[in-house]
Image 1 (cartoon, rainbow, N blue to C red):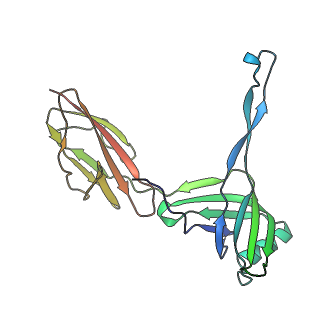
Image 2: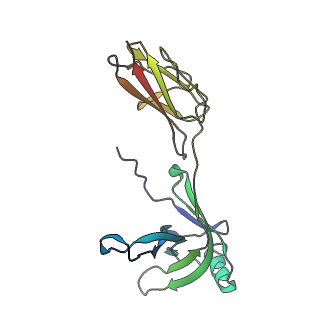
Image 3: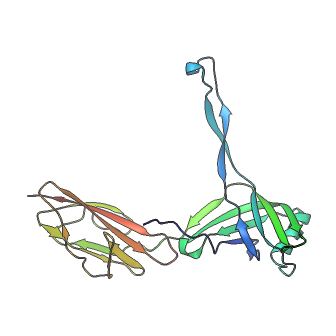
Length: 231
């Protein structure tokens, strides 16, 4: 099943005020310049390049014009006249827990009053400096134990990859978390409770167990345990 997220519900804010009636938020396009570094010794008569400075393209925001949006659309136009830069944020739908924070200059504002359609506005900003994308993360597990096997290294909340050995034919996993939903190999397990038995196969087999903690509107935390079956 795809992990794609529906885009409706995004928010654009200027100077901490949401711009009203927005229906189109341009992408944050970070790119690197290339600098030609070709020499007489460049192989096969091909040009060579190195990476130069990073830059972010101008971002365009569109929507329905609303003169009553004094803290949003009108405030942006005021800042454009005053040549005043601000902090802009682009917040993705809540379920993703993701947002861009951008120091930006206002570079354009226009309105379009068509004869037989709604009045539109378009504004544009030019990011200056590095934009930052933040992703809210789910809490870590507070404990993780296995029957018939011992984790290596010993469990630590911020350690996400483990190995273990077991002589048993199967193993159960008991994860503990203060919040969120826990799955073990895709099956939901209550916090502090053991999972269903996981078969370890034959001697020499390696079984991968994936434990995922997911809180609403936050990125999941994934723990991986690779259990080697010994005789």
